[in-house]
Image (cartoon, rainbow, N blue to C red):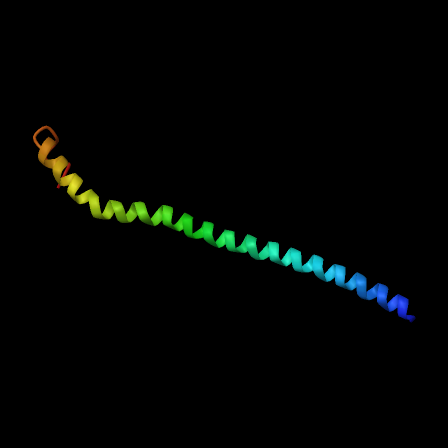
Length: 77
C-alpha cells in the first residue's frame, strides 16, 4: 500500500468515525428524553392517586354531612 492509499483510508475512517459519533450523540439524547417522559408518565399516574388518598376522605365526609339525609342509609358508610 502506498502512502496515498493509507491517507485516503485514514480520511475515510475519520469521516465514518465522525458520523458514528454524531449518531451516538443523537441516540444518547433520545434515550435521555425517553427516561424523562417515563418519569412524567409515572408522575401523571401517581400524583392523582396521592391527591385522592389525601383529599377524598374529607370530601366524602363533607358530602355525607350535606346529603346524608336524602341518600340511602347503606350507601356512605
